[in-house]
Image (tube, rainbow, N blue to C red; front, side, top):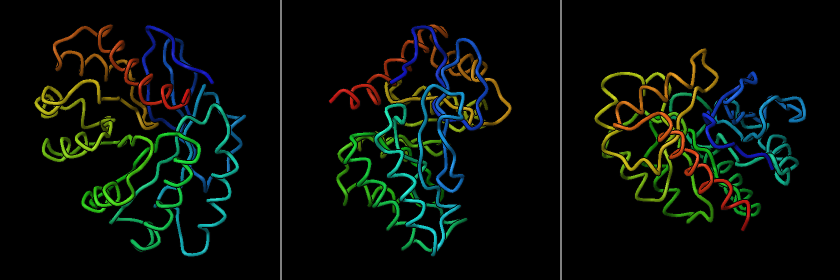
Length: 229
């Protein structure tokens, strides 16, 4: 299994990544794309069934794809998986497929990357009811402080929405949260992860090198610790 090197910038969630020296990218594959992971340039990847691309008739096909990839060493987590009230099939279908992905994550002892839009109560309820065996990483977070702490108290990690985290209004939220629960991402947007680190480091009152070290430690705790169990 590939892992970041000391001093790397970690882009925890991206799409169609292009290799850049010093940037460790985690590629996200969505099951409906039916991609061959050997064709991606990123050193590691996640794979899941995104609720936008889930329908009444394709769930089993998509789950078969995820089960096929599940044992691969460079697949470090499952997801994006989750709930979306603005786009996707009925909540019942989303919940059933989320449950199946959660079972696979537990079977292979790998974390789950979460997509959630206006369904935070449902997500928290799922976490309480399912009692997951592996941690969850909420991708693209841009919510309020109270919500952030609800998620963190349940052991989740937060990766911040690239556009939100560079705005001045995100600074107070960032300063209030434990840095050992943070990740940063580009989500495949034409932005530079190094610029995001620079802004967040300034918000946290630390050097970019210290922030890189912190996020490296977070990566090792979330992914490598579970991989070695």
